[in-house]
Length: 339
Image (cartoon, rainbow, N blue to C red; front, side, top):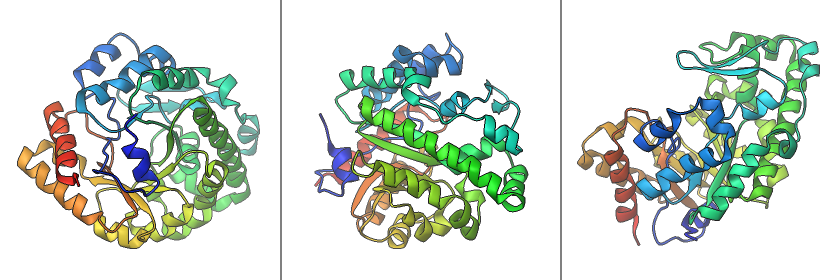
């Protein structure tokens, strides 16, 4: 197996910088669209053979150095007892949002092997077929809590912050329940065969640094501590560039960096003893190949002071991205970083 990605996670020397792309199994690929045209999104997530098929597609097409399990961060939330629906227009919808102690008490702390077996089945299928490491993942507790409290996406997260500030004990009880679920969910993925896990904190950036430390960080720390030594853990706090010194306290093996900060500055903020992942602006892939190559060179240069570097975008690849530009990105990373 090509283990360059895992070596970079551990901060070991590599012959080149490994690369994978967030949302690499997705709508920009015609091969994915062909599979997706036959089933709805949740069915795709819950059918192991199809989830495995679309997880492998970018490895074959782009020649990336790691695969990520095709799923969704809200899969365990549904298992906790919330009705989940995906709308093409509105995105995810969670019915009966969590707003009081009765709603929190009804939520289950799941046993992933029993409650979402299709996820582990997809992992086991992929492990047999892949020649690169497989990444499992979950949403971070704060990010999952926002969806559960708001009932979906939000602009200002008013309901979430109202609960944080007015009833902190209730918010803490919800976060404890979610954290237990995430630990079990990621441990089950590791037991099924994933080589590393990523914690996506997609809404961490809506918090001030003081609130991030008070209401989100300790729950990520609990997850990282529970998984320590079992598989490399990547923590990605989107829009968290202004508080990377706090993000570093999560204790993860690798820290994902979005594109809103120069990579050299991110490395400086995180410290040279941290491995980093990122951080090209996804919209760069709409540029000419010469521009892509130039920006790749800049990110690689900026990451030189890090303990290890995994090249990635600063967020997920966009559906409109030309496939040939994604291929050009991977080729540029491999060529420019070869040692």
